[in-house]
Image (cartoon, rainbow, N blue to C red; front, side, top):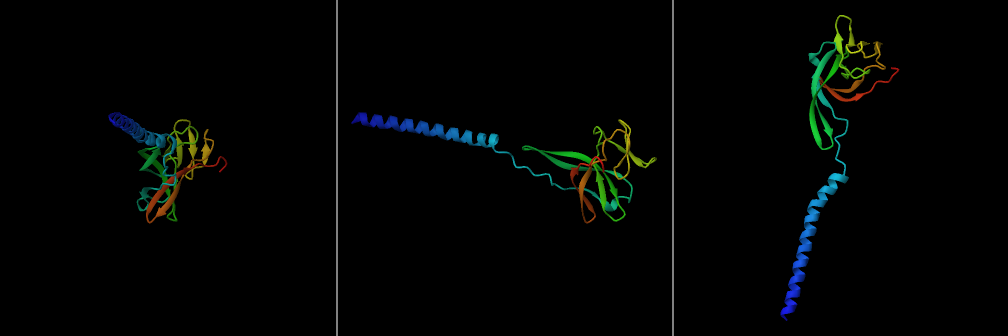
Length: 165
C-alpha cells in the first residue's frame, strides 16, 4: 500500500516537471517563432507629411522646405529631417522636387543669378521644372507625390523621373 503512494507521487512529480518544462518552452518559443517567421507590419509607402503652408511661398520661386518624416525599418521607426524644393505655381498648386541630383545623389541648390538648379559636384544644371539643361545627370530631377489640403502642401513618396522626360 505504501509503495502505491510512492509510485503515484513519483508519477505526479514527473508529470508536473514535464508540464512546467512545456510551459517554459511555449513561453519562450512562441515569441521567438513569431519574431523570426512573421514579417512586421509595414506602414506602407503612402504616408503623407505636412511640409509647408503654401500661402507663405512666393509664386514661381523655388524654396527649400525642411520637414520631418518617419522611416520604418522592420520594427524600428526613425524620425528623419528631410528637404524638398517646392515651387508654388500661379494656379495655387505646387511641385516638390527631391533634393538629390540624379547623377550621383549630391545635394543641389537654386542659383538666383542663372535661374536654374546647380549640382556643385559635377556641374549638372536643371531647369525650374527639373529638366536637365547640362552636365552628366542622366535624367530629370525626381519629384515627390504632392497633395494640397487647404493651404497646406502634403508630400508623399518620391516618384522617379523617366530618363527621356
